[in-house]
Length: 184
Image 1 (cartoon, one colour):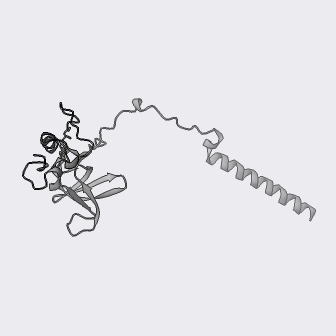
Image 2: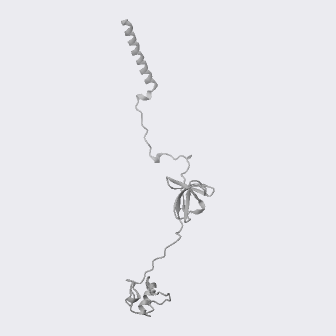
Image 3: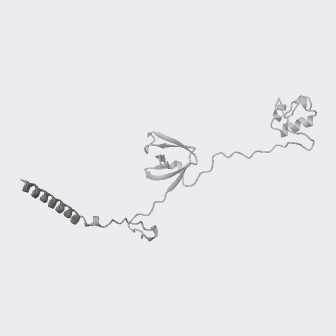
């Protein structure tokens, strides 16, 4: 019986040796450390002629006073946002007079192409430049402080206030173009 135990232990050792050798033979690359490929500089990589050219982004501007951006290319689709005049959008796609546009990477929607332009539109209303009012005349009259007819000493001064001051119209209560009738 003692002989049997020793032969079993020998077979076990021989089996483990064969298993280990077979693993080494099957994967010889494991015996040599693997090399990690090093990235090459972009300049040394030749361009791939089969890859498509980068797409240019088309930018359009809202030309209407306000333009609805919708979920689908239809006037009955839900409105995502109303875009004010002059808003720039990036065109992604076109479909039957509609543009799929993006305002940002997270906001996409459809707008009617007829209400967009390739160039930024001018503002609809340009406020006139402020007109400066004379602060003091040659005769020493000034628009400030505001005055009433009882504070004005002459007809000539009342007419100057009427003509030159924004509040001068209050001096002509009957709208006959004569300020402070009691003085004139």
